[in-house]
Amino acid sequence: MDRTVLERFPAGGPRGHWPAEEYAGARREEGVPARVVMDLASDAFLVVVEQRAPERTSEAEPVRE
Image 1 (tube, rainbow, N blue to C red):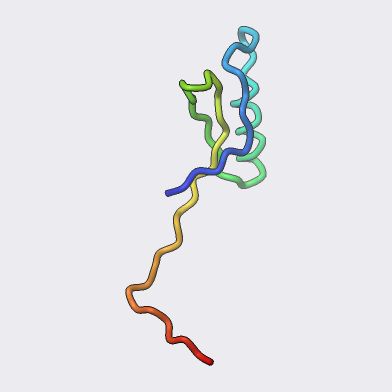
Image 2: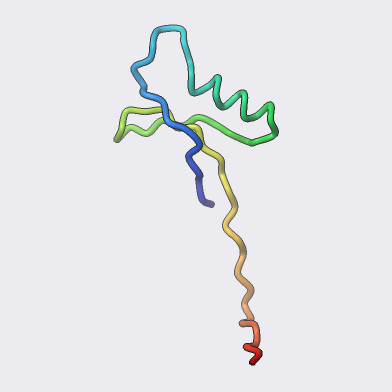
């Protein structure tokens, strides 16, 4: 699975304010399955969407000229 980052928010936000969760919630209301993950390396909250990688067929398609 691949992840697409929709938005990133610094982890040091004001106490009691959760902008990443609010953003993800708004996307979910729009029908986008967004969720929040923590990126420890950058000390930020990321709003991401999981995407399935397209499945490859075992047979190659014939080349037509």
